[in-house]
Amino acid sequence: MRPTLYGSRHAVSAGHYLASAAAFSILESGGNAIDAGCCAGIALAVLHPDEVNFAGVAPIMIRTGAGKIVTIAGLGYWPKTFPKDLFMREYNGTQPLGVLRTVVPAAPDAWITALRDFGTMSFGDVAAAAIRFAKEGFGVGEFLANEFAKHEEDYRRWPSNAKLFQPQGRAVKLNERFVQTDLAATIQYMVDEERAAATNGRVAGLEAARAAFYAGDIAVKIAEHQKEEGGYLSFEDMANFHARYEEPVITRWRDFQIITCGPWCQGPMLAQALLMVERAGLDNLKHNEPAYIHLITEILKGAFADREYHYGDPLFVDVGLETLLSAEHVEKRVRGIDRTVAMPDMPPNLYHNSDIPLAATTPSERDPDTSYLCVVDRWGNAFSATPSDASWRAPVVPGLGIVPSGRGTQSRPDPNHPSGVAPGKRPRLTPNPAILLRDDGSVMPFGAPGGDSQVQAMLQVVLNAFHFEMDIQEAIDAPRFISMSFPNSFAPYNHYPGLLGLEDRFPSSTTNELAALGHKIEKFPAYSRRLASVEAVLYQPTTGFFRSGADPRQPAYAITI
Image (cartoon, rainbow, N blue to C red; front, side, top):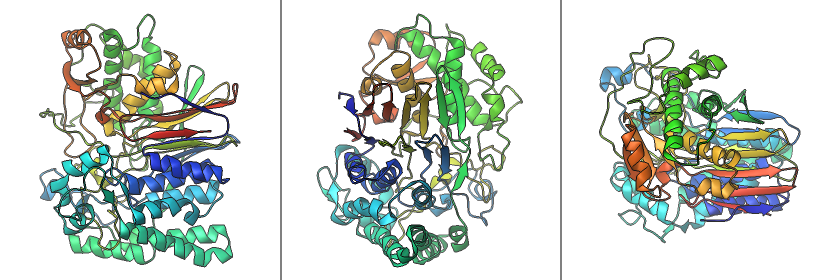
C-alpha cells in the first residue's frame, strides 16, 4: 500500500496525517521527541474527536537517549465518592451511557508531566497546532465521516453533543469542515495561564497550565456539569489528581527487550504472547498459513484468558504478573494448545476456579476508539503514546467542548471482578503503548488503536518484521486476523466464543481450513480498521537510518527525514 520511509534525522508516525505534520514541524524547529509527541497527541484529540478526547486518557512511554525508561499512567480513577455497588444495585449489572462512566480526565496532566520532565518546550508551543485545527477547522476524511454517521443517534442523545457534532442538524459529512471553537478556547485558556506564570520559569508556566484545567475554571465547570447530570466526579477529584509514574514491564524475547506498561492496561499481554510464541516454536510455519494463524490464535486465547482472570489496577489487585510471565506459566499455557483443534473458548484459569460469567452473545460492532503516535528524534529519545476516549458515550461539557473521560466503560460493574469498579480505582485500559529495544541498539516505539485488537495487531507486526523479516510498512500492510474468543473490554462486554476474524484478503482455502479446525469465521473488508491500525518508527544505529510506517487502515501517516 505504501513504502517504508527512510531518513537519518528524525521520524514521526501518527494516527492522522495532520498530527504527524504538526509533530514533524516541532522536530524541525529543534524540539525533541517528547515535545513532538505531546504535540501530536494533543492534536489527535482535535483531529480524531470520535476516538480521542482532550479530557480523556493518554498512557505514555518514554525511552531517553541516555537509556532511561519511564511510563506515565495517563489514566484517571473512579471518583472517590462513587458507590462501588451502584451498577449492580441499580442497573442490573450494566453501565448506562452518560456521566456515570466518568473517571478523572488524565490526558492533560499526562502531556504536561511528560513535557515538564523530559521536554524542552512550553505547553503553548506544543498545543498551538491543536488550537489552530480546532479554531479554523479541518476537512473530514472518510474514516471520521463514517464514525460520525454511525453514531449519529448517539450524538443526539445530549443537546451539547448535537450542537458540536451536528451543527447543521445532521452528522458532519465527508470533505466538510469540522470546527471546535469551544475546545480551541479551552486549550487557549490553559496557554494564557501558562504565559501569565512563565515569568517565573518554564516549569512554573507548565504547572499553571495544568492548574487551569485541574484546579481552575475548567475544573469548576466540569464538576458543576457532572453534578447537574447526576455524576460523581467532583472538583476535589480533579484538583487532587496527578498522573502516576509507574515501572515499565521489561521482558526478554530473543535479542529484544519488550517494554510495555503495567497490568493497569493490557500491555503485558504482548510480552506473554511473544513468550508463548517462542515456547511453541514457529519452525517450518509459513507466514499466514492456516497452521500459523491457528497457533497464534490459540496463543492469544491463553493471553486474553489471563487478562480476564487477573488484570486490574495493581494498586488494588494482586495481579501476579511475575507468575503470568514466568517460564512455568508460559509452558502450561502452551501445553494446553492442540494444533489440530481450536479451543471452543478461551482456556480456564490455571490457579483457581473463576465465577466470571462468560455468556455468549450475537456478534455486533466492536468499539474501535483510540489513536496512536510515536516519535524518535536525532538525540535517541523515543516517545510512544496511545491517547483515547470517545465523544458519544457521555455529554459534552457546554462551553468547554470536551467530554470528561468515559473510560469507566472498561471497568466491570461487579466490584468483585479484578477490573471491577471501586472508588479511587482505575479501569483496566486497552490502550497500551510499547517500545522494542534490540541488543544492537535499535529502538522501535509502536502501538495501535483498536480496543481488543491492539495487542493482536502489534504481535503480528512484530512477528512479520522480526521473524518473517519484512520491512516495517510491509509488516503493517500484511493481511491481519483477530480472535474474539473472550469478553470484550468495553461495556456490555460481549463475548464471542471461538470467533476468528480475518480480512478478506486471505484465500478461501485458508478460511476453509481454519473452519475445519473448529474456528468460527467472520470476514472483514480488506484493510479494515476493526483489525487495529499500527504505527511504528524503527531507528537502527548500525545503519543510521530511521524506518517508519503507518497503517492504511486509518488516515495515519509517517514523516521521516
